[in-house]
Image 1 (tube, rainbow, N blue to C red):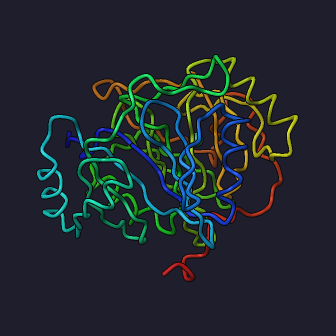
Image 2: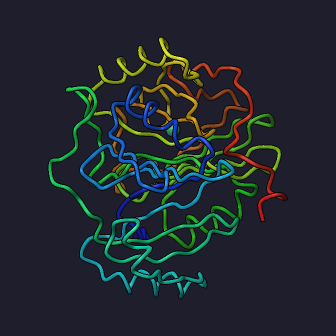
Length: 310
Ligand SMILES: [Fe+2]
């Protein structure tokens, strides 16, 4: 089996006209810490890393970059040349950009749909500085990275050829939802069930559908759920448990169009034991153990038809 090129999903960056709404959303609902920058960027922290999600002010809700951490102990240049050997055009980023991401070394490349990816090493960590909004706030990150992100892409075959074939991510599960919702592939680079999922849904859309953060404490998920229900933030899906990663979670609509899933209790994958599964809902397979009733919310501003992207 080919080794994945990455240690973990390290950070995400988006642009949004509603960057200023993130401090209340991230702190009140999830107990995250928010560090504002002078340019209006909001940096969300949920562990000792300098940031895990950056929301930059911008005219549209767009995924700006997906940050991958290079495996520890490997030479950064080796990963870059492996990408280049596969035909990926990799740009090494100047120190100024690396400083903005608070990493030592940084390179970037695009996926076949134009989504920017970044490879980094030497992320700044402020040891034992994370203070969640509630005394009980704690998230599962470390070797499993920030959580996961689900990208909507217009062509799953093209997506898998790149994410699995070139980036070396391993397919954990495939879920066939049927004509209305399309098909998803869940991809991992460590023991987390998936760090990225690719979702081809009807309508040729592209963008960030949701991001998941995992709580270390089931009661924190419950508290965040209570806060959401009492607040004006929209609930995208009720509490439930997925069949795939067995995570118990709920979903809220963020100020930037994509959903944020908060969960706990997900399974770890052992590469030696795992065989990829097909969860075929069109043949009657269930995707949820219970719950996760998706609410009739409006279209997501973080997703846009592909033809307007370029
Ligand atoms: Fe998820």
